[in-house]
Amino acid sequence: MTKVGTHFVVVTGVTFIVFMTEALIHYNYGITETKRIPFTWANFRIPTGKKLLTMAGIVVVASTLSGWAITKIEQQI
Image (cartoon, rainbow, N blue to C red):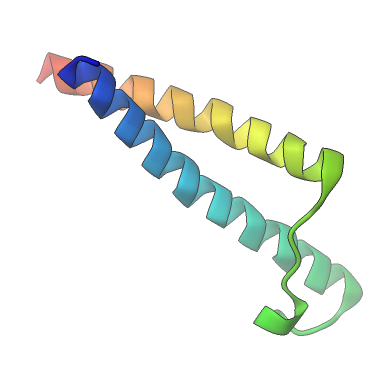
């Protein structure tokens, strides 16, 4: 893999991890607000099935676009 290709994979992977963590926090915050329960680790849930796949799909697309944009910007600098 080329240096540019490796860089793209690293940037996209790190972005995916950060965005997915944020998505899970937002998902749980919405649930706790709707149910009027405290936002704590004890109430933290990871969605299953289609909800999780949809969330991960959205995050993959956003992460890939972010990786592509960062790579292109760095090439211009």
